[in-house]
Image (cartoon, rainbow, N blue to C red):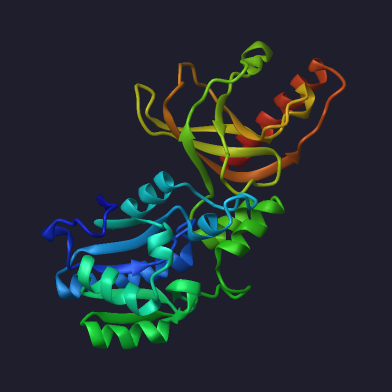
Length: 311
């Protein structure tokens, strides 16, 4: 998959795709239904399957001090889109210039002139242009004017409400990772490099791979049964484990992170990219009376996580 980040200076070979447009935060089943339509159009017209998205997320651009809300970072999003067969990812910088474009200017300058897209696919709730003034219906009209096709995909409903990033965030906030997975079409994942911690877990007999969750919507704090993919390095592969997400109240710390104990693993993962999938919520964060009580609970957590992960 190619990632194109400059809409003005674009190689001619990167023009002409059939592209789905949106933020694709989480790449949930609703997004995947839009991609399925885009894939069908790309195959029928013999054009590359593309996605146009934005970085940073427009919400973060307009409200940089807002509570973290993203389900995945840009790297995780790109990884997921590549798995779904996207060949051209137009990851456009969302800045003052782009935000100031009217809906018509966005259609004429970005879609038609700069990227030369042959067809665009959007959800029926799609809005674009300055002040979110343009609708999916407006985009259809602009397509007729500027020479690109437009397909509007219906909202996906699983019978318990429409699939949306908002609903997925709510499920994660409530400690319902399986409900989130039902809407995502995959387990919610935290992706990133393993960073150095204080190595307390090693002293307790539970060495952990630590990851920052800065900028991401925090799942309910507590302990989870997890699946772990090590994406690079000598230990590349898939594993099982238990992860603690939160502020580590036992040790008086308050910066949330994700600490994962990988079962039956020995090795150094510092700097390695890993992906932690939240399978099941086991319990909330607790502050124990002693380290012995903490270790006893960790033993129980890991035993329960193994039982869940092994079916």
